[in-house]
Length: 97
Image (cartoon, rainbow, N blue to C red):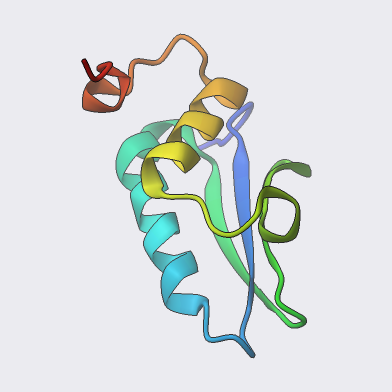
């Protein structure tokens, strides 16, 4: 199967801070929502408090810049907005009254 023109997401996390479970959970959420649309979701261990998510090198979340960790809904919105602006995210799109 050829992965042409499909985005690759990288989640860099701090192994010293024990953030692997958080990173793997976020990877699972992305694969659940965008499985057929992604080339890959890769976990990359690092140090120094890193938690950075990028799509083909374009950073969409940086813990140190964005102030913490994204929740699943925010992360999915950022991936959708960057890669698939026409995609409906279902219940995430419904506005609260």
